[in-house]
Amino acid sequence: MATSCSTWSERIVQLVRMMNSFHAEGSSKAHCSQFCVAGHQVGYVLPQVLKQLCRFPDVFRIIEKPDDISRLELVPELTTYEQRSAAMQYVLEKLKAEDYFPCLKQWRNEMYDVMPQFSDPPLFCMERAATSLFGVKRYGVHINGFVRQDNKEIAMWIARRSYCKQTYAGLLDNLAAGGLASGMGIRETLIKECQEESCIPESLAARAVPVSTISYTYEDERGIFPECQFVYDLEVPIDFVPRVGDGEVHEFYLWPLDKVKEAIASPDFKPNCSLVVLDFLIRHGYLDADTEKHYQTFVEGIHKTL
Image (cartoon, rainbow, N blue to C red; front, side, top):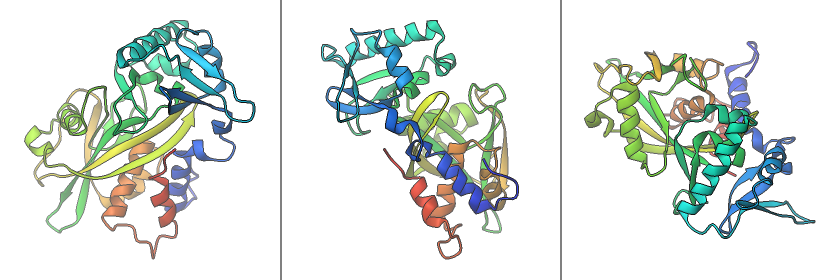
């Protein structure tokens, strides 16, 4: 992410830019086709993905516009959530069997709903591992677990991801987090992830307070990742200690905010989780606009949408 001689602020600026790489000059955005369903744009498709999808004319059609960006659409004959979902699943299983796209090697058997805006009814659902091929927005929930110590200072519970995870193995993470699977609500997901990952009882997890969202869009060799995370703060009792639950976490640490602040600017922290903690530091007044010259860059960079 940055050289060791960079200041903390410079490393965070680089992190924010990396997590919004799809918006940057020279990104693939100018070469992408819009992905539309039932008249709504829901994503972006890279040229190499478009080439493969052309093989499925019963599912997709391409609208070429000489003076504008081309558009990939699900065929209008697919009129229902169930029809669209089944057609998409058929295509993705074919592509997975061909072993063409690296992202499909991380197949989860976990379905994500796709909609123009979060408040809209879902148009269809699709395999989580394939969402980056279509640049559709993914939603999740992240929980900042923290303690007010006897000296009134805040300490934060940090998780280290299992070294067996499919993605970002062994990196530092929030106390609990997870994507919003098809049909799951935000608080329902929060309770589930707290129980499964950190053995936090529902009675305690229910105290989590919704405080923010963060949004960003990056791209890598797997595709395009527009994401929005619903952020919650959970103040836990000073004697509470999370425990490893379903094996997604290797261990937990209780760190003072000074140490957490340094950690989020290092390659040891999962990048989007660094943004969640950065948002916590801003909201709790741990960063100040008078003393942090990149304050505005930080705030804008964690709330950037397509």
